[in-house]
Length: 315
Image 1: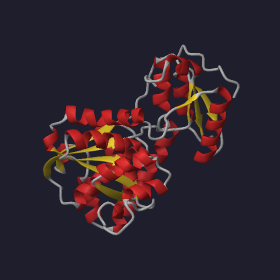
Image 2: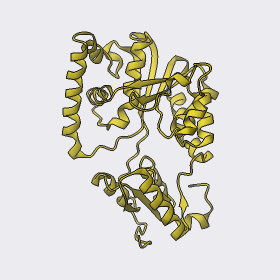
Image 3: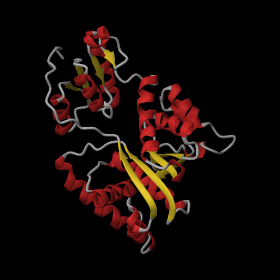
Image 4: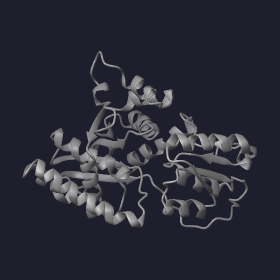
């Protein structure tokens, strides 16, 4: 948004990206730019309050991502707004790259074995991957996805198979983002929802921070990868990106219950092994699991009130 000219910013911005909604609202507040955030009707009250506090106009529409995108484009055309983020936009990718910069600045990067990041739209892992591969190529960039989503792990190394880039393109990921991902991702780890739920509990026990299942995805992947690749007890450092922390207060009891049930389910699958594994795979060095495992969050929640008029459009 800083690279938009003043006339464009004056017209206002709009987004349908739930994961980028707070960032867009925060930037719009800083630049005193009108903003509209289009989200599905299932959006939590907490998120709506945070966005309106920052001065954004929130429009709830439909139940699916496609419904939200269509409404976003309709409002963009109607009010001549700028859509943020634009898929594959170099500034969006560069913004994600600053996470890689923070990792290098805050760690001894020669000591870092791997960074774990969710593979969703691809922009986040593409941005931080570019920076890490140029500044600290020794650090592995590991993508994490749910086990029941399209399997892209076989596309990393298997010759004769469709390339990772082609697969990402088939998922409607921006061509430029797909190209970058195919060059910077070293490995893919898949995890079950039970592993993700248990990760939410482990994160809270180690850091006293609550994240939702999307935010815990990379941590679950980190646990799984360290164990399956023989790095338990390693002196190397491992970093997981918690890409989201939107958890409504009313959802906490449900997450706690589901995490407990997930632990019970995994214990039944392996009466002894998985129980000790779940206990040993915490995110702090003190558990003897590794020398250092770190959770880095990308979610920013501002706490100031807005002086930008959010009622500029009839939507």
